[in-house]
Length: 130
Image 1 (cartoon, rainbow, N blue to C red):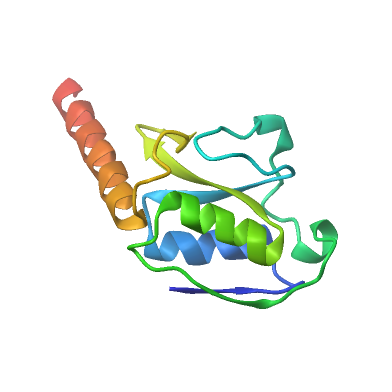
Image 2: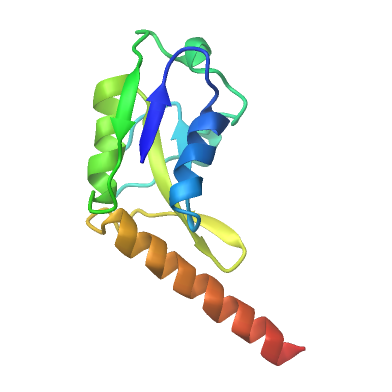
């Protein structure tokens, strides 16, 4: 998967491209970077309709290739290093998106599958309750 990064796109554009390839994962963008295994503060979250030109000090454009074998920490660090974007990869558990603070060493493929299994389990539980 390739994500095009430039001043004219919104954070939502990046999120959509990412989620098209990893439907059980989501990117969240924050004002401040976080350290490995750390959570980002929810009050630092950017709105998805924010354009890159409005938040980046240095205007850099490029293509970011993200492979399923990349670890969560590598993707988050690369967004920061190349584009100055503080990113958290989120996982869906039941009906909530949660930060992957303890899962930074998982690959995107592993994490997407884990999140899918959480979703499948939740759907089965809901069916059993009905």
